[in-house]
Image (cartoon, rainbow, N blue to C red):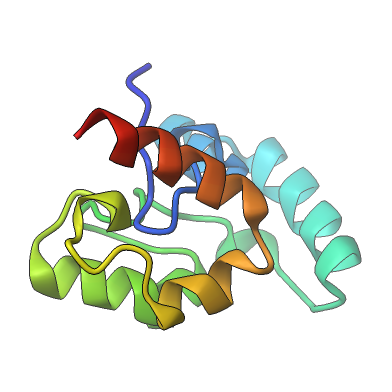
Length: 113
């Protein structure tokens, strides 16, 4: 499977919502909804576990629809934030404070550009 990197550096192709959508796997949707509900302290239903990837056409996971970083990246037409000349901006920095693994991936990509 091709590695798909979201605007923020998370790997869409490694995400449970992406995998469940790709394989139309309801068991994975149920398991993911239970796990994410526990770790995020929110009620997430199996029907919420659908996503075609951050920058791809189609359905998105709940937060991804409203993510300012994703919307900015799509608006500017970049593959992900590492391709932006303003990398790393305050909007991205605020998000990456909660997902440091995204910064590592984006820094790796930025170094190859």
